[in-house]
Image (tube, rainbow, N blue to C red; front, top):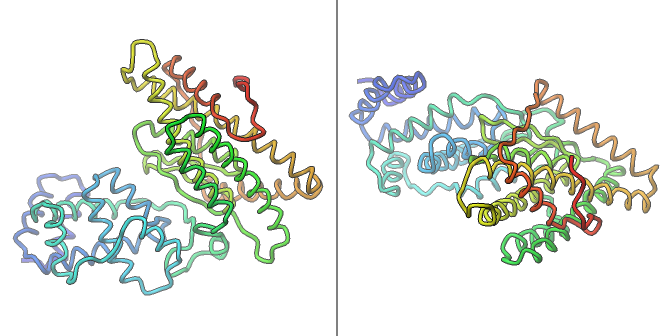
Length: 405
């Protein structure tokens, strides 16, 4: 009988060919082929597949997201074990943000012996060995077929261009942004809309001030920040509406975004402080938009019956109107900062940073295309617009509804 590596390779190849019958035959041979040797070989192959993805732009959270999206939560938990094993085997330097992602995924080596890993994993999941083997082979087939994506940060071991190594990665540790996180957390947890609006407004004010202050500081820094990037999940349902919200929040914070629908994320490019603002605001506004949509369902004619067209129209309208108001708040902050620092000092700095972000965008996504927005429910559109109008986003935001597009 072929060795464990060959049996695994044959099963992965059959699955990638979408030959169901052959894949089942190869899986049966894996079951018969033995336990410990197969466990070790599977884990080793998983570690190798992940290591090959890092220079191709993938990060731990990206891989966990797409495995969950395409295969489900149980195979994703198996993938997390693979991430822990790969981190254990990593010979080179590992940046702190990488370990932060692994910690966020709870990736840790819990097993004592690789020879018993898959058996132990199946026991923890309450599944039989055949199911565990099938999950492992499906994860390997998916990883082997992933395309390269934009390299946003230097992966473990280095070896990426200096321009990427100069981009800031991970959280800045700014006390100002810690305050923003606390404000948004309170805004999401409160059951009083007025309190949520006030907390979000204060957070936006702090974000705008912090971004401008950072831009001015960078003009005299010896090693100035360079544009970097983050990926934000845009999972179903209503992935397009979530991507639109990312785009609107990004544009209001001097960032560019590109949506990869097939991969389930949007890539946002910008300077570190602005990227952190986009992450914070997008996460909070998505929570608030969803809550407003649910309230809107209950208020609509005919009661709370859920329709996809209504929900999509609501979220699209919410995103566009929130984007208008965020941009208005940013422009007001720009004017105030220009008056304080002098327009001759601030405006060239902002223009240069915008140019740098666009250049990064062109370099990473030379073939990007635009798509049209389709709305199929007028009531949902008007409800989403009204919900966005009721949100006060900052001290300089108009209290009356903004004019339509």
